[in-house]
Image 1 (cartoon, rainbow, N blue to C red):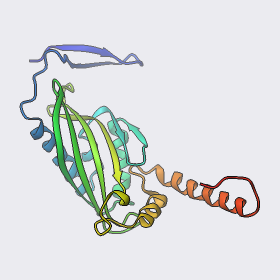
Image 2 (image 1 turned 30 degrees about the horizontal axis):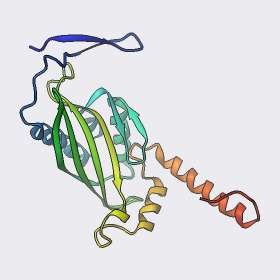
Image 3 (image 1 turned 45 degrees about the vertical axis):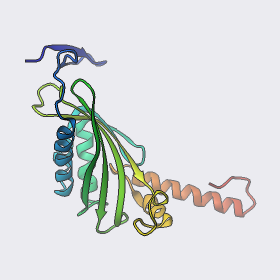
Image 4 (image 1 turned 90 degrees about the horizontal axis):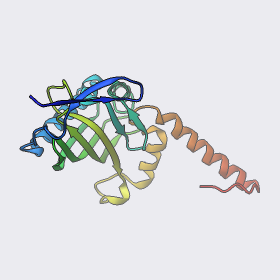
Length: 212
């Protein structure tokens, strides 16, 4: 059994974690990464936000393609439940592992290429993102590896072959229409569009406000 140490949070709560100096090294980081990606892919394609969130540690960090930062398994699960019933309803996500390595004892860094096929709505079409995920095998009581951090980056049309990706204009409109991985970005995108339109109107009327 692994030796344990205690970590005290700012709020005074106590969490028991594995001592990194006694934790076992991972024999095959690729197997661990593929297992976790498999769970994420199945949960996404089943439209199950709770199952998706269950792959994350309780205080995990999640950054979506808009740069919005979500903290905690509960919030990650709730956000995905929201998008699975709205902008990404019926979508299919294919997650392909590009790289996996053990960066510290019991810690795996995984990079995947995620191809999302959305059948309808503002995000209709095929979209690609690169996802960088840190997986820990030392989260206490989990019984399986859990994600402690995920950062997603959208691959824009400008970086892909024109025949394989939507046009840059369509991609921009889709983002402005509400490409928010955890729901909250929809209103922010609309506000951004409104501010841009206001700036153009003021500029055309002789106002000195600069347009973007």
